Amino acid sequence: MQIVVVDHPVLSDRLALLRDQETPPSVFRTALEEVSSFLIYEAIRDVQTASVEVQTPLGLAPSQRIEEPPVIVPVLRAALGMLHAALRLLPSAPVGFLGLRRNEQTLAVEPYLQTIPSGLEGRPALVLDPMLATGGSLEHACRAAKGCDAGPITVVTVLSAPEGVRRLESTSHVHRLVTGAIDSRLNEDAYIFPGLGDAGDRQFGKM
Ligand code: PRP
Ligand code: URA
Image (cartoon, rainbow, N blue to C red):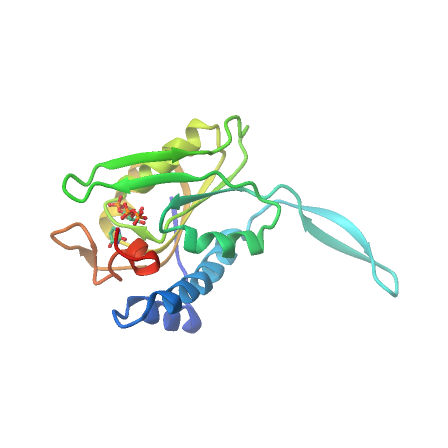
């Protein structure tokens, strides 16, 4: 698994905003969308393009167009805040939703929605979730995508814990992990430390 930690002062600035407990949900959502744009921009560097010729006002310009974008798989709820950024970069990409809830007592993954199109026939997948903590949710998501015959999987997270990175690595389902930061560890409640708290609650309020 290739691991890319994106490093840019603007990204660092918005990550600081996301981490700050005083940041209200409206500002948090805007910063998450900005961070997601930077991360997804890096994550799709190798997206397939086709050569075309475009007629400019002056003549023909040899150009590249994105041919078959990856299927986007946001892990609900928290990745809803990343989806708009992904669709702005890849407007014609199909979207398969995956609803997963982590049981906070057992840490087991509880799936409640799955709309990834079956028969992807090797199409690359871009799996989005702001938080990679124990890795249970993203492991489930990547297995679900592979079960629909997805090709190479790129996972995009805002923050990751070393424990979750190792777990994803061990599945050998993930081609590339693109993340904004790898924090020091999980805390006793299996939250990323120092992290940013609960990414779903910070956007949409406590469930
Ligand atoms: C959060 C987060 C990840 C998961 C990470 O979702 O968005 O999906 O926890 O934890 P893990 O790596 O240990 O599985 P949560 O289950 O809180 O649901 P939500 O997005 O609806 O808030
Ligand atoms: N889910 C979150 O939203 N944050 C964490 O740190 C861990 C799981």
